[in-house]
Amino acid sequence: MPLFLLQEQTRYFKEDDPFAVTLLLAGAGGVLLTGLVIKALTGGFGKKGSRGEGTGLGRFSTFALYRTARAYGLTWAQAKILEYVFKNDGVTDPGRVAADPAALDKHFKRAYKMIREQNTLPEEEIQRKLSMLFSVRNTIDLRHNTSPPASSTRQIAANMAAVLTVNRETYPVKVISAKGDSVLVDRPRDAGGTPLNFSQGTRVNLAFFTKTNKGFSYDSQILGPEDTSFGPALRLSHTPQAKTMTHRRFKRTPAAFSCTCRLIRVEEAGNKKKKKRPPKMIVESKRMPGAVTDISIGGCAIKTQASIPAGSRLKIDFDCSPNAPPVAVLGQILRINRGGAAGAVMHVKFIKVPRKAMNTINSLVFEYAND
Image (cartoon, rainbow, N blue to C red; front, side, top):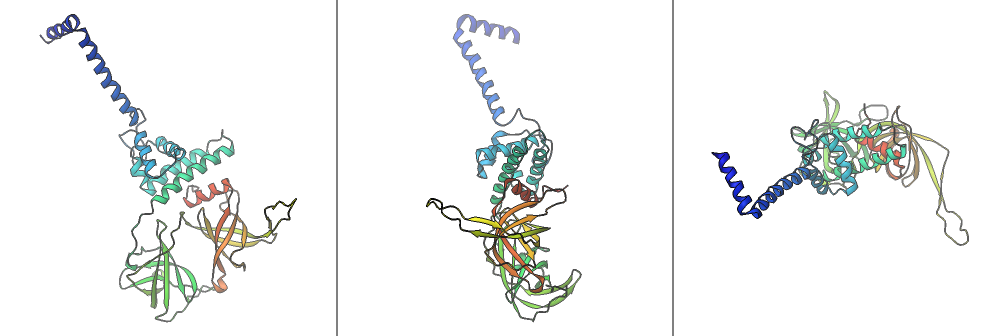
C-alpha cells in the first residue's frame, strides 16, 4: 500500500504539476548543499583528533581555530602557523588548549621538532618558520597574563625564586614557605658560602615574579634566623599590602650556562661630503667570563666578577648547550646589582639579535630544545 501511494503521488506531480516536482528537488538539493558547507566550515572533513589535550572523538574545526586566533590577536600569517600546529595534532578544542600553557607547549614543542627535521628545506627557510612559530607562542603568552594581584604575602607559592633587598644589597633567594606566622626564605650567604647575619627588625624588601610574569614586591622586616630541613633560613614578617612592579613583557626562565662578554666602543664616524654617517661599533678584544642566570627574548641576567658600568654595550657569546652552536648577540646593561666579593649581576637588554640566535633563545625560554 505505501508503495502504491508513492507511485500515485509521483504520477500526480508528473502529470498534473511538473513545477512542484522541480521545487521539491531544488529544496532537497539546497538542504544537502547547506549541510555540506556547514560540515566543511566546522572541519567535518578533517582528520579525527588523536593526541594531546583538546583532541578525541571530535574533528578539527577551521572555524574554531580562526575564532581562537582572533581572540588572541593573531595576524593572518600567525593564524596559519597555529592551524599548522593544531591540525597536525588533531586538536578539536583550540580555545581550551590555547588557554592552557602546559598543553599548548606540548603541541608547539612537537611542531618545533617537525620543522627542525625538515632537512629538504634550506636553513634560511627553516629559521623563518621557527621565527614565525615563536612569534605566535609569544603573542599567546602575552594574553595569559591575567593572574589576580597578590594581596598578601600568605599567597606566595613555596619554592618561588625571589630577590631579597637588605641595606641596598640584593640577594637571590627562594621562598621556603609563606604559611604560618612568617615567611621563610633562604638565608643569603657570602662569597665563601657562610650564611650572613642580619639584625632582628632590619627592614627588607622581597620581590618576585609570578608564572605569568607579573611582578610584586613587599616591604617587610627580619624576625630572626631559623634552621630548617632546607638549610639556614630567615623569618620575615607578613604584610597585607603588595606593590605591583613593572610587568615583564616576555617570558623569562632560569638558566645556568656560561658566556663571555666584550665591551663595544662606539665611535662617531666622520662626515663624507657633508653627509652624516652612522657611528661605528668596535668590539674590543678583551673577553670577560660570566654566567647567565636567567634569560628571555628581551634580555638576560649575567653574573660576573668583571667591573663594567651600567649603560655599557656588550657583545655576548652564549655557550647554551653542548649540542648547539654558540649564540652571539649585542646588548646594553640596564642596571647592576652589586654583591660584594660575590661579584655583580648585570641586567642586560638585547639590542641586536640575529634570527637564528633569537630562535635558539626562544627554544631555551620555552624549553623546546630539551631531549
